[in-house]
Image 1 (cartoon, rainbow, N blue to C red):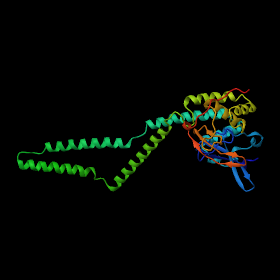
Image 2: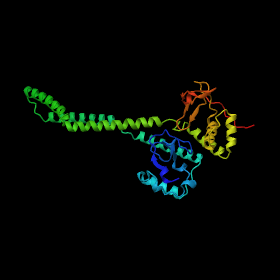
Image 3: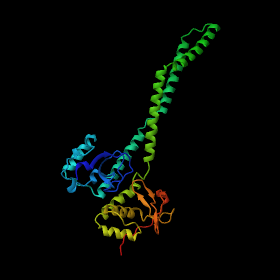
Length: 322
């Protein structure tokens, strides 16, 4: 294999899963892809986290600068890539990768909460300024009227007229900005409102106990402990354990490991209540269950139904293999 088969890129969304650890690659996260020719016509790309990409014998002698997309990377990512290739590409285990994702998620949540607290409330600030301007105008008007003589009723009438004129003039002056200045003020207002709404919404969405991993903080701790516990087990043991708990037994050892750790944390995943035959798949990063369908004799029954955490009741996990 050569450098022509590889490509560096930043993930355009958070939908694709890493082919190594099966964890979703987050949007704008650095990734490396292996391009292969499918059916002799189409090129497909298998994406991985950099830390999940094994150099092995195929790529150990490749200069990363020859890989497509290298010179489009950020400076800090170029350094990370060079260090990784020079170090022999010691990829992370599924446990290490998931723990790092959890830590990053916790840091992101903390930052989002800080941004929410610092969000600028434009409307409140403008209302405060408007109130101060009105008070200043009233004080200025009263000060001018006191300096006017009021010896006769005619002069009093004139004073009254003057007061009205002053009030009108103050009102007129307050809105006498040019069209250009008013337009710029509106643009600034809309910009601040949009920023405030974005930060407020972002903080609101992240301000829950389930983070973006489908677990509560307490469950996250337990999940990490279970990952480390089952990592020492063999693939055959994990398959047997999944069989006892009526869970799918297919996949690599990393996939089996994730299923067992999740099952021990939350319990057995039940059959789809919509179609009655599909085995639900749980996305640990979003907390969403999805039914892929099932084989009914020789016919595949499609489903695609999605469920939230609240809609699925898990059964106790059996941790003994007879």
